[in-house]
Length: 473
Ligand code: NAD
Image (cartoon, rainbow, N blue to C red):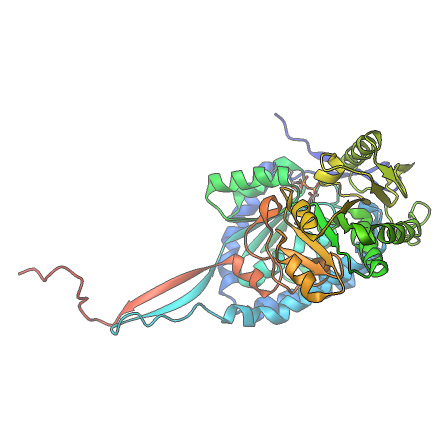
């Protein structure tokens, strides 16, 4: 089959095809991998402080292009405020790694004084080429979140952002060149076939995306015997307990569910509320949701941006239609708004059942089903009755109770009396449970350890080891 040389770019605000994305030929991805493998030893041999100085330069080169980057992210994602947070947060994260990485890598595995005449040295050895495959919901941040600590560790990077949101690539290439990183960081563009070519050319993969694609990526990595960090989807629950401050919970959950139009992996996508506070909570949540406005007329006014990926539109429409046809009620929203692009108004759904797709499957949209439960035990059981385990939230005015409940939830990051804190506090280590992912923590300083292997050098001081065969006569 011949490879396409370009893919159409769709503007999510207008729905128009307003550009073309060049597709990197598979042979060129392989060649880039070889070039990176050749350049990496010299990069890894630099003192970590010198690698970090280039990362600091990258942060400045991106900062110098901030306005242009924001326009490109606006064209690809249709949203402004979240893009500002994304660009500024990414610059801050690169600066943080530039400062922290030397200390993280200095902490070598413990020296083993094995036996009197043998001593050991332990060192970190970076993976030569780390492949990064990223999704469309935070295009710049999720392309760099793993790449930056991997670079600091001494790896080279072969990155493929989502074909839905790659307009920033030429500008990032410019910034990388300015920071002296072009030889060790190559960006390629394209869809799934390009992603597969990245896997073939890499020694380790960091993948962020859906469970379905993550499974294919994991299988391809297993065939090649290379490690894969998989950061996948979720259906994150929130539990509102009977002693929760319902106004506080409603505000937090309106943000946690509807920010970025619900297109965040750690979005709250289900609420279980205990019966005694259900009516008050649902009324407060409905008020909060109804007050949010769409950005149809002006991307800088309003809170809810368009559905970014065209492929999501039918999925969300289908979930809503199925739920409403089977008796669910939308207290706000409930139908998509088409204005060239497509918007999903904040939708609070009640009278839902666990077998509805909107309760069971990832929506990745501003849709929030609310389920009334009899007690804490039922809330925990139903929150855990899912194949996902990314994050969750618990609301209670009794912190000890909230923590006790949180410890029974099968998820890697749990906010107490707030929502989506794992997205805002990137220094706390966490891992995904169940189908939401695999691999070490990408958050916190432990993240950098994913990119190095421990090597033990065991040194005999010249003594005949007692376990050797007896000397030949
Ligand atoms: P996706 O799985 O469709 O695509 C992700 C990336 O994989 C894209 O770059 C795509 O081109 C590439 N790809 C597609 N097929 C491939 C293949 N066969 N081999 C290799 N690469 C391939 O995901 P998406 O729709 O872009 O993103 C949305 C999903 O990402 C949601 O499920 C969301 O929950 C998840 N996500 C998870 C996190 C997290 O940290 N856990 C963060 C953001 C998004």
